[in-house]
Length: 286
Image 1 (cartoon, one colour):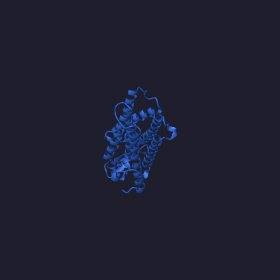
Image 2 (cartoon, rainbow, N blue to C red):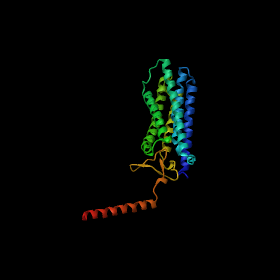
Image 3 (cartoon, rainbow, N blue to C red):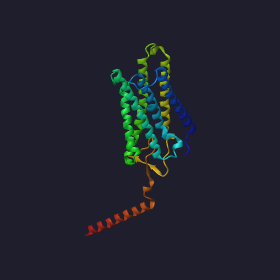
Image 4 (tube, helix red, strand yellow):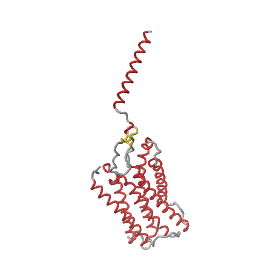
C-alpha cells in the first residue's frame, strides 16, 4: 500500500534523523570539549553522563520509538514484530535514562549536594517514573496476548496521549537542565556575556526542540498512519473508534454471522412469535 504524501514524509523523516543525530553529537562535543570528558568517579566527569544519556536515550531513541509505526517499509512486517521493536526501543531509552539519574545522585552524594531541590529534578524524576509505568502497562496490555480487546480499546487512547505528553515533557526537562547547568558552571566569563560554551549549548537546545517538533508533526499526520491489516475490522467501544498511534486494534471478521445464518435465525424467531400468539389466543377462548 502506497503512502500518501510519501516524499513529504521522507523529507521530514530524514530531517528528524539528521537533527536528532546532530543533537547527540553536540551533547558529546559539549561534555568532551567544554566539560573535560566522561568518567565514573563521583566527580564532574560522572555527572557528564547525565546530559549525554538523557539526550541519547530519553530524547533521540524515544523519538524514534514513537514514529517506528509510521515507517512505510515496515508495513509488511507483522504487528507483533513492530510492537516488539517499539517496546524494545522504549526499554533502551528507559535504561539509559535510569543510568543518567544514577550518575546525578552519585555525584550529589560525593559532593554533599542536596537532592531534588530544583524544578528540573522534580519534573525529571516524575517523568522517568511515569515513563517506566507507561512501558510496563504497554508491555502487559499490548505486547502480551492476555488482555482482552475491550481493555485494549480503553487503554489505547490513554497510552497514545500519555506517550506524546511524556515525550514533550522530557524535551522541556532537558532544556531546563541545560540552562540550569550553564548558570552553575559559567562564571568567568558568565553566561550572560555569550561565551562560546553558552552559544554552543544553546544551539544544542534548539536542535532538541526542532527534533521534538518534527517527531510531533510526523506522528500526528493521519495519512501516514500504519494501515489496518487485511481481513480485520477496527474494534469500537461505545460507538467510538479505538484507533491510536499504534494502529487499529483488530478482531477477526470470521466470527461474524453470514447472511444465510441471519436469515434462518430471523425465520426461527418469527415462527416462535406466531406460535406464541396462537397459544395466547387459544387460552383466551377457554
